[in-house]
Length: 166
Image (cartoon, rainbow, N blue to C red; front, side, top):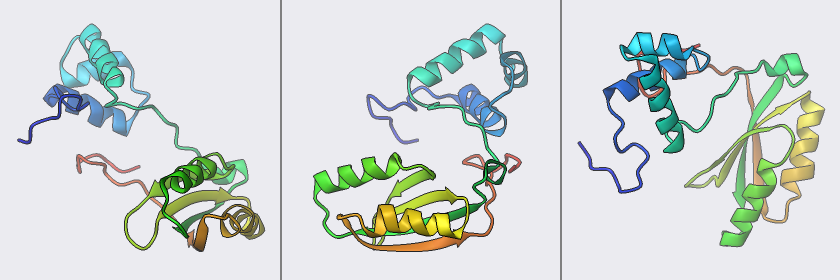
């Protein structure tokens, strides 16, 4: 088993923590009582462990999976972006600017030919076009942007491989 770095958030994550994390990954709304019962510990112990996992950064948040079409943004796309220059300040500025744009669901900074993948949700094709033209294709740091529409996406089983994908 690999050793953990001194400030590694996974240091001290044991089998009980892993079981709790797997249950939370399936259903973040599980009650503390039910969580404790499912992993075989007292509710006070489960609460203390959850608090510790949050404080150490192992749990970074709880999120709702939202139907974007119900919010008027049924069209999703991944936009591959290449930067013209790879200076640290331009990378930081671009990342910061893109993360603040309405419709951006996630930003991935990558290695290889593509520097970024930007996952966006748009109202329609025209809205998506305007997003790309107004915010990416004309951005001074961007040399190329290529848009791929997402037909469908499904959640996988996560790192445990046994969870029932929703």
